[in-house]
Structure formats: structure tokens, C-alpha cells
Image (cartoon, rainbow, N blue to C red; front, side):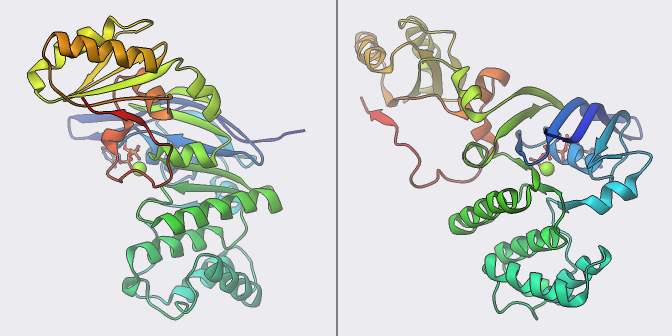
Length: 337
Ligand SMILES: Nc1ncnc2c1ncn2[C@@H]1O[C@H](COP(=O)(O)OP(=O)(O)OP(=O)(O)O)[C@@H](O)[C@H]1O
Ligand SMILES: [Mg+2]
């Protein structure tokens, strides 16, 4: 039988400063089962970190209740802390300590012996490609190395539940793939539950059993990556106009295509769903030609999680991303006219 490791109802947090109020999280319901890898996906400022800080007892909720790893968040915060691992978005290592010492000290706080902590720490250093850096001060490590050290610190005490706040931001593709594999192994070998935040759709897609999409402090969708994608039927057509003033005319053309729904306009791009991308492309190009509209690109592709996000919120998650596309991602069918 599955057991529930996170159960939260109506979790909310409002920040108040003088007369200003920020409703960072406005009532989140969450259930995570043991052994699940759950992704918390949302753009900058959506409320991911605030939710995580509440679930890890670092921030008191304004409203709501939660049990985490079997302990009540409010009445037994020590119990929660004892059972979880947490890698914060900003990291938590002391710049002047020694990397290896940081790891061992952290494990000892959780009752591990120095010998056991050193052995496991060395193994994690090897796994995360930090070999040779045991004696180094975190302030002398590169950004990506320091991020990997944060992750080692979060995992050293073998927690049953791990919270990772944007663990792969700043990691190179190999280090990202390495971390994904490590997370999968943890679940496989130890049944560890992982709750991670990300605004990388490919990460959520590749790694997570289930995705919760958060926007403006509330969960707006939830499901497996496939279930979420299948909410968006047909193909997705993206037209980039050459002249921004013609964007409305292009939106009208896209709307008239077979099976089209009201397209979204994002700066110089029109994004619309159509029943069949191939036929729609041909018809669209004819329309553009007829109305003498110049475009710099037309693309038809299968729906992605980004389209799910766009459909739910009217905004593109990619707007929040600064990272270039990952090599090896499915190629788009691109036609330039
Ligand atoms: N201590 C604070 N005081 C005031 N406002 C805050 C505080 N912490 C967070 N906020 C606000 O709450 C909102 C949610 O912030 P949060 O850090 O949870 O977002 P996030 O989803 O983690 O974003 P990111 O992807 O940028 O990390 C933002 O509008 C943020 O400015
Ligand atoms: Mg954050």
C-alpha cells in the first residue's frame, strides 16, 4: 500500500511589509505518495520556493495545515526536519568551510558517524563529479561545482523525502543528466520520495512521475506529463511575423484554420492549436501570400508541456527561461516563407 508523505491543505503565505501585502501562496492542496518524483513547475515568482520553505518548516504558513513525512508541520517541526533533506534555491554551504567537512558535519547533525559520513560523502563526491575537491573551500568552487556540493549536503544523511529547489539551475547538460539519474537511483534503491521545483519543462517531462503546475500562488493543473500534454489536442502552429503591426492579421488567419481555437499572441509570435499541422500550414501560407504578409518563420509541432502552460495561464513558461533549447530535443517541422 502506498503511504502519503506530504499531505497539505489550504497552505498559504502572505508577506506583509508596512502597507504592502504579497500573496505569495494562496491556498495549495498537495498529496505526495512515498517513492514518487513530483515536479513543481511554474514561472518566476509563482510561489514555488515559498511553498517549499513552508513544507520544510523554514517559513510559517499564514493559513493551512500539512503533514510532512508523517509529522505535523506546526506541532512537530523538529520531526519534519529530522526526516527530510532540503536543497535550497540559493544553497547553504559556508563559503570558508572545507567542502568535505561541510558534508560530514551535516551528516553528523543527523546522527551519522564520522566514518560513515566520510565514506558516503566520498562516494557522493565521485557520483557528482566533485572528486579532488574535498579539501576546497566552497567560495573557491565554480558555480556548478558549488551547486553539486549543495546537492550532496542535501542527500548525505539519506533522507526518506528530499526537497530540491531548482537543483539543476546553473548545471551543464552532463551534470543535469547525472543528477536526474541519481534521483532515479535514489528512488529505485531506497524508495526515496523527491519533490523538486523547476521551470524547465524538459526536466519535469523527463524526470517526474507527476507534475503540479503553480501560477500566482495556486496550483492550476496536475497530472502525469503525458496526461497534461494530451489535454492539448492537435498540433501547435507558431508563426513569427516580420512586421509586429501585422500580428493581429496573422492571428485572424490562424483562427480561420480547420479546428483552430483562439490563438495566443506573444510579442511577434502567434501560437494556435489546429487539428492537423500539415494541412493547416499549406492553407496558412496561401492566406499569408494572399494578404501579402511577410513572416520570418512558421512552425508546426506536437504539443509540449509549454503549450499546456500557455493554455492554462495565457503565458509562455519559456518567457521565464533563459536557457537555450537542449540539444537532442525533438526537432520542429520548420518552414520559412
Ligand atoms: N520574504 C518575502 N517578502 C516579500 N515578498 C516575498 C518574500 N519571499 C517571496 N516573496 C514574493 O512571493 C512571490 C513568490 O516568490 P517565490 O520565491 O515563492 O517564487 P518562485 O516560484 O520560487 O520563483 P523563482 O522561479 O523566481 O524562484 C514573489 O512575488 C516574491 O516576490
Ligand atoms: Mg524559487
